[in-house]
View 1 (cartoon, helix red, strand yellow):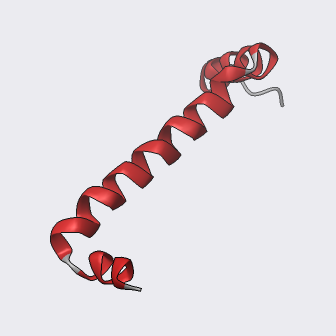
View 2 (cartoon, one colour):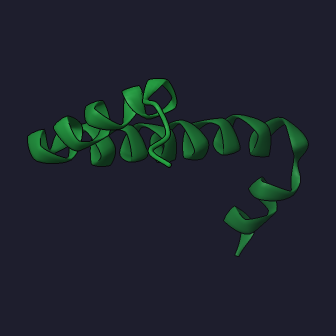
View 3 (tube, rainbow, N blue to C red):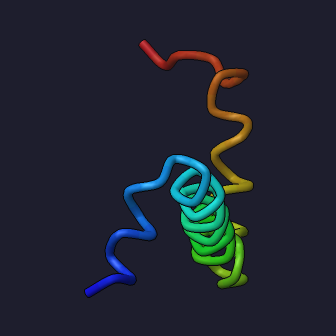
Length: 55
C-alpha cells in the first residue's frame, strides 16, 4: 500500500492531474470531431447566429 502514499505528495499529484485532464480533453476532441457525420453536423451549427429569425 506504499504506492498510495505517492499520491499524497503534491509534487506527484499535479503532473498526474495534468496528464489525466489532457487525456480527457483529447478524448472529447476525438469524440466530437472523430466521426465525419458528427463533424459536418457541428459545422452546420456555426451559422445559426447569423440566420434571420422567421416570425
